Amino acid sequence: VVAKRNTWQREAVREALGRSEGFVSAQSLHGQLRETGSPIGLATVYRALADLATDGAADSLQQEGESLYRACTPGTHHHHLICRTCGTTVEIEADAVETWAAPPGLCARCALGFRRRRGPQLTRVGRVA
Amino acid sequence: VVAKRNTWQREAVREALGRSEGFVSAQSLHGQLRETGSPIGLATVYRALADLATDGAADSLQQEGESLYRACTPGTHHHHLICRTCGTTVEIEADAVETWAAPPGLCARCALGFRRRRGPQLTRVGRVA
DNA sequence: GTGCATGCAAACGCTTTGCAACATG
DNA sequence: CATGTTGCAAAGCGTTTGCATGCAC
Image (cartoon, rainbow over all chains, first blue to last red; front, side, top):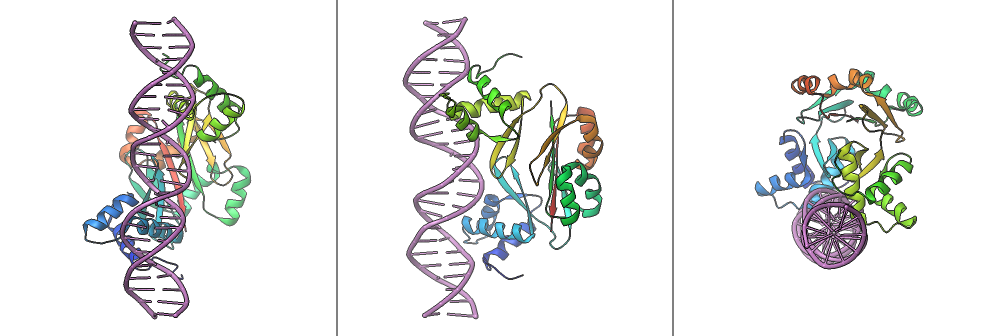
């Protein structure tokens, strides 16, 4: 993988992310880094997190208008299960979840492509009433 | 149900929401209403949507930093499946999805409470690498 | 007159971008 | 010297809130 940008501070962000339990916001990550004496800027944290997410080294989710990030083991094909109630997150191997999540989570047309391409997919289930 | 607020324009928002296919943003909904000659303000659209979502008359999801809304059949206990690839959304009856989604989507501790309370839950599955 | 919905504009929080300064090779 | 990262500050965007107005009862 060719280094695109954020070569110095990006490592600091990656470390801080790895040190954190569960998902953290960019701002809280920035706060932590500043507390440890780093002069890192908020913009750099955002840029680093965007890169990490692109490379698959970090996983992100949206919650209440802000993005939360979490280090995840890169290179391995896996999914996350996030408990909506308590926030507990588990990485699980791909095959297990695809067995139950992929077919009902995609419409017929896309499920076809999913099985072929196995591209990024997200299944969401909301409960009402 | 006692009318809390937004009694007049709320109905206009509800109608416009029902007229829309799939999920729409508050801003686009506001634009549509203004195009039809309504003097409704953006704030009122947001307030009405918040109420509709609270009452279960609308379903909302977050996508790329903005909230999208969709009318849904109120009073019935149901879930939504949203295809991450093409955005197709289907309402499905509760029992079917709870069979496969609830147990793996919650951690052990919360799943217990889920079965007891059957409170609002959301299961997300993200795919990486 | 009282209460509450409404529209407007300002404020808010998170994120992104413009830019000048600087480190690296 | 050329390239690309950095911090800061300002801008951007969706959303929320404060407030004066006006309608309904």
